[in-house]
Image (cartoon, rainbow, N blue to C red; front, top):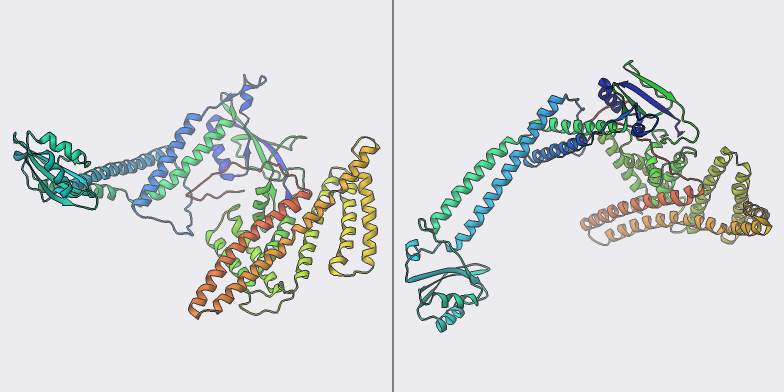
Length: 632
């Protein structure tokens, strides 16, 4: 397939139908709406058009979305709900404004319940802390009346466990005439003590205790004992727990699906308001411009005017790459590099073929390929991805099949677990494997150069195609034919042909690569400098040796895992084999994905691909929790 042609679309309708028309466009999902709000400031149109300012409404809708999602999370957490991995989203239900407002109030009520629960939980924590402060003094039986005596002073408090009671008592005996010190309790951190003295010695006692980081505590109540206070706290905690339980019962999941639908409704309303910000209006009408793939026509029910036109020369428009279902998942690989621009060839079909070949050759184990293929196919079937979703899983299916092919070719099935007679043994036929890797690389590069030649011809630059691509074909082919005998032995007359091809090609490059320079000397220097680029071509070819390297690493690690498994008893052997193969398939699959992508980006795209296009992003419903059928 190719980069689709685009048409400019203009829609004019009455303001009373504006929201309905835009929502209809969102549901269809095949128009990218332009921002033409600048028309409201244009000298020619500013007296005709007005700009809509929905920023406050957008902010309000965004805040409502946050609140509704908060309510959803509360319901899920309180009721310990978790959606299945392969969850089928319910269909989206359009809401009226009144229905949305009513549901939002219920969502706010859920949040209020949770806020009240949180406050009660903090109160419970506070009571629990107060209880913990009292528990060490539980055995103390001193009335408040005794504490209030004028001539007897009772000091309660705690010191670090690092200080001995005898040590404190000795210090008191040196400074205080009349006192009594008693141990009340001990825990891992503190020693709880009570000191009884008279009014005259109180300050002396406090000064001595200060040296031991004494922390005084006021735990005596005039009306209740410490045990009674602890019991009262327990009663309060139980009351709070009952309130929390009653509030929690009100957070039920029966409205969860409606709140999820409400969230998507608010998301769509927000998108609607953003679009309205980008269009202009008159007193009674609205004016909208955008882009639509050529060939797609909107069914007009005569409630608005719609016009189509082809893009003008040099007019910027978004790029829509239209490919088969087989190629489409691989577009994500290209888009990570850059979206194609509208004037160049779509690289995806060719890139897809080589991505599959290279990935399979790098992973190169039939057992791993079977697991990868079945796993990806299972996910794709269960997840029921919509168009444009699940690209990674979809592309792993053909990559897994390619892995099976290369694994059988190399005789690898979970390493050497099952003996298969290889056509090429990577551990023995190393030079053949290297030659195959470099040959695939040369083919890959040559196709990239051919695509560059096609683009130059399309631009009517015939001589550039001959000089900048054709001469490089001749030079590189001749050079490769000269190098092959050094590595693989005599190839007969082909090395002679290669010599003459290389000479002709190099002379041609020296004479043509500096053709844009001024003067004969400048052209000659430019030509010699252009010939130096042959080193980058050789570097690119050698880069394909990674095909061999990853192939070998996958197979060797798999065989080492099998060898380790045989060295221990069967139970541990199976466990070791499972662990090693699991790590190997994950690591090697990731490495194959990364290095295959790298070969596309640098060695292939570098020959012809410019990118820099703007991806076609049609206005559509961005639903998180529900499903909506789009026509596009």
